[in-house]
Image (tube, rainbow, N blue to C red):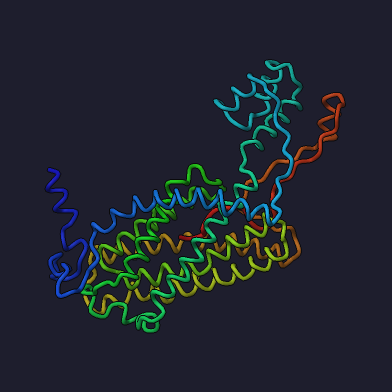
Length: 380
């Protein structure tokens, strides 16, 4: 049974066009071809990335945050209360009004005090500014290096200037070491993002980020197996061209350099729109949808690859909508915030303290940061 499934999964007609077989892609005469077994090494490389990231955030990003004067805003902690803590952990972080009244009777606090306790408790669970800065620093460093390396890999290739040459001789196209390592490193990095997603800063587009990471891993892996290497390197470099700008804008935002952050954000928005909504659909998708049909009939791999490309394009449109909405608010002079951000809730100290019978007036808490929140990659 398992052997049958294995044979069907690797059936040449699913992966390769025409009458080609896997034997046509075996190494010979000094020419090396992509193999599915190459992808196994991306998993240990992903774990290595997590280790490198840990030390980078500890010994590079943290001192850099101190150098840029990244400061945490004071957060008032919720006082210990077993009754409210139990409800918070088991029933929900935002109790309804009827639940607030019940908890008020059980805990001996007023309704206002219960609501304030839950606000402070939710703020405690939100990621710190330093955590956001370190994550943005790590991603900025990788995306910048990946973009530079990717351009070095493809800029001297004829298919960088003539899209038809992407398919010249396909699928009998050998690979070179720079293409191999570019693929392995990019794929390993996205595996590491998927592995760390539970501990990274969560945003309102958390589900879209999961879809993006999975779609990217599937697309990159599949393009390697079916030898779409030339198209794959172009698409990866295209995505990396804007990601490092976003992460650098976040870093300056967390450091309080608002004007620098805003200027970089505008550049990022322009690059994102041009690369993801113009070049990707009208050049890259055109290249992967139409040009292959001039050489061979459509097959499953052709359809699967382009469906996954369409999924990524849909995510780009979603993120472009958020970016344009932020850009509109910025241009019109309104306060601009990340549409995906999850910022600290403020406390209306006067009203709450009056309701609780006075006492020391607590200062408002506000840890939402204009323009951008952490983590990403609108892409890929």
